[in-house]
Length: 395
Image 1 (tube, rainbow, N blue to C red):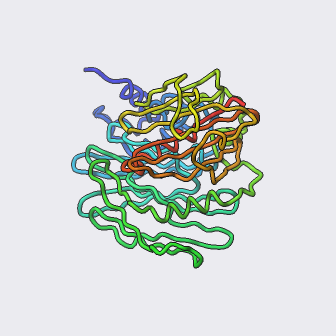
Image 2: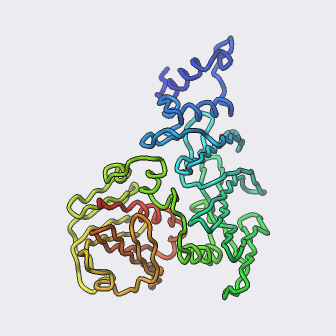
Image 3: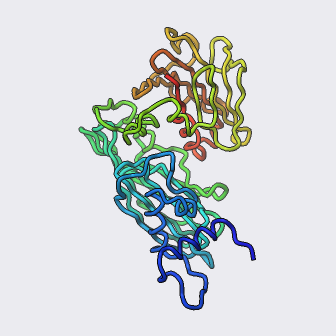
């Protein structure tokens, strides 16, 4: 009888945790919430065996956290299958995680993008079951956000099905998106916008997509309002606000260097001094001529996913040059952090979305051109944002 590595690790952990986990007949010990909680605690203190058994729930490139705010374990049966959900919340949200395991402790889903204080609920209708995770966090020292995450639990598929902000509080206003209807295949929301809003629509509808197991809206009204508020609000924070990987490292007291920031990124252009993370299925082409959205062709790097029909192009320009010397699309917004990023609106062509960026860091400056199909943008939005947010500069 063969045992895989995970089974061996789990068996060793069970033995070292005490006799209460092993019965007299030496039957297989059933997985329980208590056992998973013990493994999570051990994983985040640097126990390699526990972390391996949980499919690296803790990123060992980060220093161990000082303490855990809370661990929430829940379980749910779908037919003959049983799943366990895990929320681990920390003072520094860079460690926060939501994960789902099956009864063999195989990882089915992991989400490390959760912010702030976390709560979890179950939801079900006549067709499907879900876990809901709510986030509450503050950003730019003046904006308070509440965000909603919906995870679909099927017998063979666990999927993040929806993420949307449902409340924003600024120094001058409060805007809310309430779920007023959750029936089979449709989520209806009512929007409570500020009195000075120019939007006429106060309702939105998210429709279930059976192909990718997601709820999608053609309008995304509330998220567009939130995005506008975020980009138009200047940060007043002078402390450890986390904006990107550099600020995340600094919030942990880690000495920041190009090597430590770029550890995560799997593409490095040493000559142009930038790195980027490419998910599985993306190809990198170096030293190509980039022409799209440029007034003249320029040498650069091109990253493409044939499956998604999406691409990023990166062109290094001179320190004293500016994007307007090259782009045909105006850059109307700006965000300042460890890098200065200027960017355009997302422009719709016949079939595609296009967006242009200028990234500056001390004496280095880059143009980034993003393009993807309009029809699948919402479905893969987080992938595109992760790639863009991973852009690192050796400055």
